[in-house]
Length: 76
Length: 223
Image (spheres, rainbow over the protein chains, first blue to last red):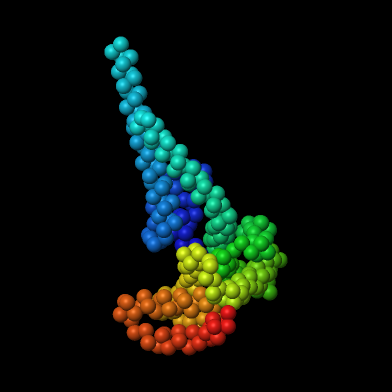
């Protein structure tokens, strides 16, 4: 039988294929204890985490931008 | 460039990298998907569900894996372990249904073919032994890097299902002797040195290593 780490790694790659980075991250986290010494695994996991952080930051900045625009309109 | 532009550029770069990772892993992903599917079918069988159609489809779509030789020995072993579980679940007897008998014969056919592949893969290493020495003009960094890559794969194959590094070392030394497998010899030496650093008593293994090494020496000098 496949162990749960292997299954999670597989699901993470599958999620990357469909560009579902949040699901990929969740599955990488589940697989992580099984692939502690696998450099390739770490690279994919950390890249996904970085991408999510970038996306979150972009979303935050865009939100701030929208608020500023709204303020300009309300004051103007 | 604004902060948003910089982040967008980084986002594109990371997405493109992950896309390429997936592309690179496409074939591997297909194999993992197949193993995962087989695992699911076995679980269905243990829950008493009828798996005839599912397992039939599995063999129909994955049979070519063996002829295309795209499976690693570790994959073959993994699939065979799952199939053995499934065979146990089938509980074949003289009263078994034709469907069960068909599944059973498909499993046996797969195992026969896959065993041939594992043996062929082992024999394929032989030419590397003959050609490897004395490549003074080649890039030594790449040669060492390639060897390291092969050793890592060999370790993965041999260590699977083993509980202790000494069992792995024993198997590698046997392989180094019986098959004059040079990669097994190098990996054995590596493990012995590692164990020595960890405080293990390695003398019996060093003796075996030296015995195995004598099998390689004439070839090294004749090359």
